Length: 265
Ligand SMILES: Nc1nc2c(ncn2[C@@H]2O[C@H](COP(=O)(O)OP(=O)(O)O)[C@@H](O)[C@H]2O)c(=O)[nH]1
Ligand SMILES: [Mg+2]
Image 1: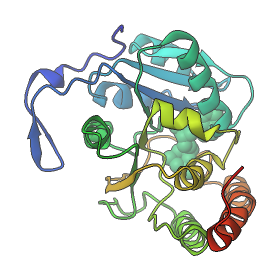
Image 2: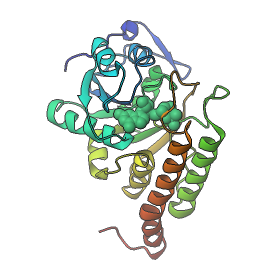
Image 3: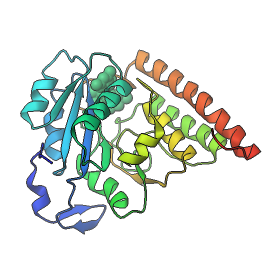
Image 4: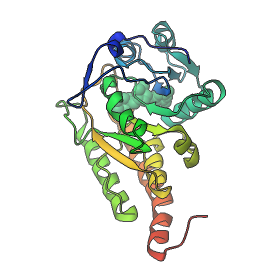
């Protein structure tokens, strides 16, 4: 598998989650980054990602130099003309299916440098150790820089995770974007949301498919550049609406099945 990012930090002991890792082999890991006008933050994100199999940046017709910057830093650039976070993730997956057969683990990461890409080691380790199929980075249990998450986003995440708990009996603390999942598990989920519902769809379906799910705290800092989703009124309203809609669409039938003991078709 070719290398797309070249930080040399895998050649020295790394501290992640308080423990020391020697030269983690991440050649079977592919990172997918949906990016819309993120030319300022992408270099930092790409430089901070430990050496993995490949990094795919999905650009939705950005008006800045996102695609050129991503290519310059060694990422595979996928163009997707349909706007939307989920559409970008799906385009990244389609590219992966066509071009990277030896990928075993997929990591999703935002392009705004809010997350700490080096934490990828902590996300992937439980999957490599066969302790989990899906590892979710929780910003709400991690160290959050003041102002990193607008109050409406914090409330929205808490409400959504509460509703999931109510309907499915599974306690999440966040719908964070930074997450790692086994490729075969993700394929089982048959993801389809094209915009704001991507993260919640994955979590609900993961519960339904009885994946082994683990949440770990991840730090979260103030983004570089301008928010496209939770920092805008339009993004907040649309994301809130879509997330609640998907919880109803997927969560209510799952709840009925849970209490009647019926199996999913
Ligand atoms: N490809 C693509 N990426 C998007 C789109 N909307 C947002 N993003 C990316 O998704 C990530 C999360 O968006 P962001 O603006 O940080 O949302 P916030 O964290 O809620 O403020 C960032 O990497 C954005 O560049 C989109 O329509 N297409
Ligand atoms: Mg963000």
